[in-house]
Image 1 (cartoon, helix red, strand yellow):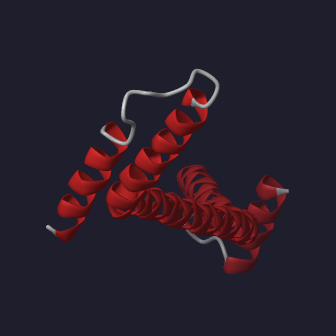
Image 2 (cartoon, helix red, strand yellow):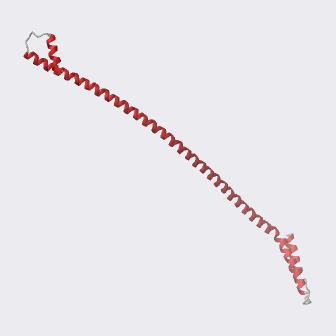
Image 3 (cartoon, helix red, strand yellow):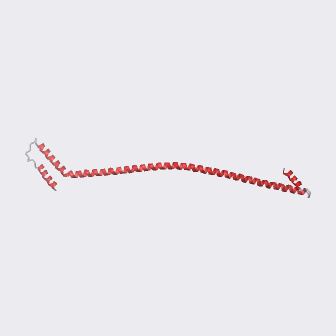
Amino acid sequence: MNKLLLLTVLFTVALFGSDGTVEKSTDIVWRTINFLVFAGIVYWLIEGHIRAFFGGRTAGIAAELNKVQERLAESKNQRDAALQKIEEAKSFVNELGEITKKECKILVDKIATQCDQDVDVLQKQSNALMGLEKRQMVRSVVNEIMGEVMVHSDANMTNDTMTDILKKKVA
C-alpha cells in the first residue's frame, strides 16, 4: 500500500510539474527528467515481480536441465549395463561353443568305442556261429558216412576200420 501511495504522489508531481509557461528550449529536459522519474518508479514497483518471474523461470529451466542430465546419466548407465551384458553374452557364447565342441568330441569317441565293441561282438558271434555250423556239418557228414558204411559193410567191422574209413571220407 505504501508503494501505491508513493507512486500516486510521484505520478501527480510528474504530470502537474510544469506550470504551462515552459520555454521550448527547456521543455525537452523536463520531460526527460519526468520520464526518467516515472520509469524509476515503475521499475521500483515491479522490480520484485520481475525478479520473482525471472527467478522462477531460471529455477524451472534449471530443474528441467537437471532432469535432462539425470535422464542422460541414466541412459548412459543403461547403455553401459547393456554393453556389459553383451560382453557377458559373447563370453558365454564362446564358452558354450567350447563346451559343445568338447561334448561332441566325447560323444564321437563314445560312439566310436561302442561301434568298435559292437564290431568285436559281431565278429565273435560270427566266429561262434561258423564254429557251430562247422560242427553240425561235420556231424551230418559223419552220420551220413556212417549210415552208408553201416548199410554196405559187414556187421563185424572194428572201430579202427571205421575210423580209417571216416578219415578217408572227411579228408
